[in-house]
Image (cartoon, helix red, strand yellow):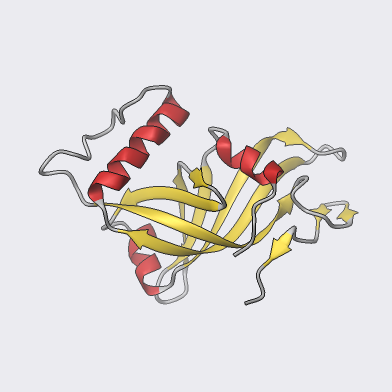
Length: 161
């Protein structure tokens, strides 16, 4: 696990949608857009337990998360945060519902998720995904590397364990 730089935490704390990549068992990539939150240096998101983005993680817990920031760097490139990590699936409907209410406030400005009542007895099963970050990269102040014409080639931190 690596510690997230404060600049990366600032991006995660904004209401910016994240792109999450998982792998189907046959190796094909699967991409989803999710709302993300943070618990210290862990990234959190939630999804229906029956969906590919969760089912894939039960086979292979590795994930890539990408978030485009609303800032640009000195070269005029949009900053983006790229996180590689290992997931832990929390199959707890109440925790997932609480998290989605928090994300509803963050992303929509309303305290309760208006899309569906995840606390209803017949609510579809929802999982909370907790991501331990293994590597931080992308284009932004969270990366310490030489800048090229297309961005940065380095990573801020990497767990080699």
